Amino acid sequence: VNKNMVPFDDKSPFITSGIRIGTAAITTRGMIENDIDSIVNYIDEALFLYKHQKSFQSLVKKVNDTMIKFPIFKY
Image (cartoon, rainbow, N blue to C red; front, side, top):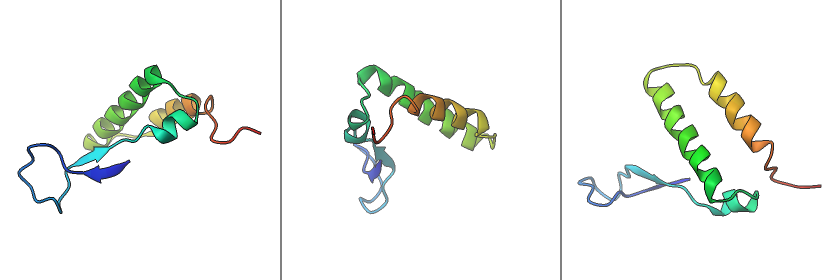
């Protein structure tokens, strides 16, 4: 993830207001297009929890349960 400008944003390019999510790290772990839906839902839930000052504990478990299936390194 990195910070990027959002199309039609009225802010300076030095004040980025969007994020870009690269797929290289996702596909390297063996994920496919359908798995991106889960990632988007996790990001959405994280933003909601942050906005409402709620605990991330259940979200962390869901993310870890998903990502255990897609290890960074395979031995």
